[in-house]
Image (tube, rainbow, N blue to C red; front, side, top):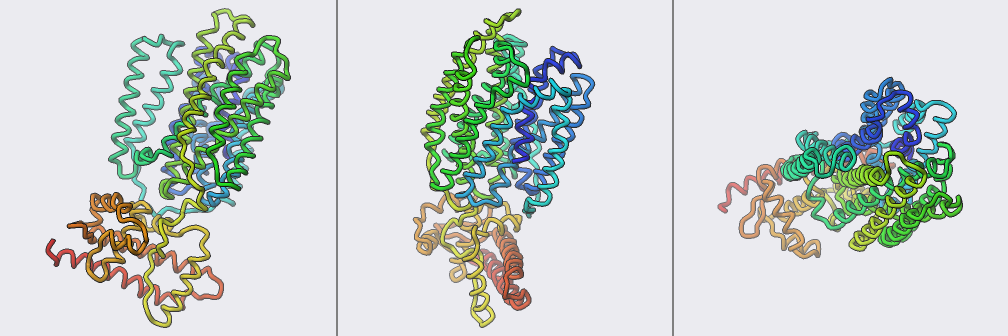
Length: 616
């Protein structure tokens, strides 16, 4: 929550300080870039940090993001020109993007998914509260201190975050050898930048039909297409395209984009109405937005708690989208003489709708993604929400500017605000239509849930010590809150999904006697139709882990090597678990575990040898 507070606060904290910054530093023609550079960098980092967290560990990714954010904050406060301020705002944005994703992803490492709704509800509430309270704090600093304190305030808070995170966050190290998708990083960075600039400059800096805007739009679409192509072939893609094959991920991502678009796009210009039309100070404009915070906080926390208790989530984005549309429509009726209580009521309605929608996409994606894709899946949803926010600010800014004459009066500000919210209201209806397609899947207890009732990687054998080991392993397995399979898979460094590794184990178990296995044999053991396993088996064959002839599957050379690494990871996990178990001694079972591991590896090698000896 502290990390989310840092990241979300600075999206809007400078909004009330911008006039003062321009008066101090000059460069009014670059004013929009103080916000745009932050959002651009944040957008780019949200799609990258999830994969970095999967590869290097989410604790390291989280701490690195905090450090980046603090560096950007310190030098933004020290900036003596608009150019330097824009540059270090971008550094801030990189850190903020990392915090946006890892703040949600680390929750998934330590909290079972059925309980995660209330935690994500708190995270979502913090995001919304910070976003709305930004203008209030910015106004306080401008009125009573200096605009530079809008950045310096992050330093003590960031230091606190580092201290707490270093002590409290678990160090979940990945055994995967990092393979960075540099080309994918470059393409998504350029495409995101281009698309954001198109929406920012179109209709303001350049006409929508100008060669600059058209060329930038076409170039961005081409870069995006190239990114998709590269990600389908990359060894470790930054955003695996296979995630979009699932309807749940696709719908949740679209919903996240729309909510980000409506939220930040609409909220950003409310302080302008309060200051320019109703004539309040920067500080008071922030205070007058507190009703929106109250509404958002109420439904974000309530929906999170209900989701945790019932496991049902679809109703919240469906109902919340309609309430959000109503709130945006009501805000389109703001007039110069609209009373404080009426304005507050409109804001509460919008806040109630946003609070219902914000955290659901993250919960849904974490519920349906494989554990090894947890980081990139969370990252993908956060990326689209941030991209939606960037587009929302840019598009609403264009609408606002186009309806504001060169010499604005109070009446012209009212007309521009009304038109902006009137155009925004259908976005809530669009969100409602998208939410209707969201599939409701019962929340499992953890993203590490087993793929079947298989007993895992072990294959105990006879003997007194081994029988005792079987009892110890069975007791350990029953006491596991989450399936340890994904953790063992990650420790092995094998580039397989949980489903692929599980099927490889089943092929081994059914190949020991005959040298090969069929999917029907696996189906008989698991009581699952054989057709369910066919896509995964095809993937293993295509990747070179298995050989197949007439429906019979055998280990390839690569499959044998992979099996060896899986057994080694199982051995390390089991020794560590037994060492921590009260009433057992590691040396009592080490010899048996080593013998079992050697037997498993030896059997795997024999299967590979048999593959070469038997004609296919």
